Image (cartoon, rainbow, N blue to C red; front, side, top):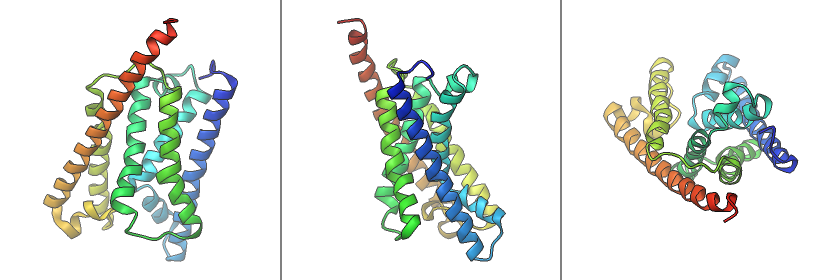
Length: 221
């Protein structure tokens, strides 16, 4: 990333700054809500870190920041790889699509929470997908990659269920095992995982098509 043209680097820095601002704003709002409810800061942080939206936006923050600040380090090189960027793009696009299709009508955020909501569910997903398309390496990714990317939402489901069992609170109604039972929760989780993998296959297809188109242009053809 350090060798990128100055204007491109500036755009990536802007994306990183906005992504961090979005996550930190939501963290502030979560802590504020916990305080108003008479809960501890620790409880507010636990609540904040319970959402797939927050964790995936944090992943976006890391994905764009490490190649900027540590381009020669293993972590910077990892998040500069085409398959890793495409996987993060799939994850954050899934956040936006799942929220829009499943959750946007379940609550009515106001004020700063509305602003944070739009940033986390719409603005950052669109900007990161744009980053993937225009800035990530044009080398294509393997068809097996979506299955590997699927480890992330699977791990999140396990984490959410363990967390919910321990604290008695689940971040989303469709994985609220206490309310709908583990059987229905696992069915819902499997359905969402399949949707994630299908989205990943779409991203992979586009990525490979982009790589084929880019190769002759890069060779002067």
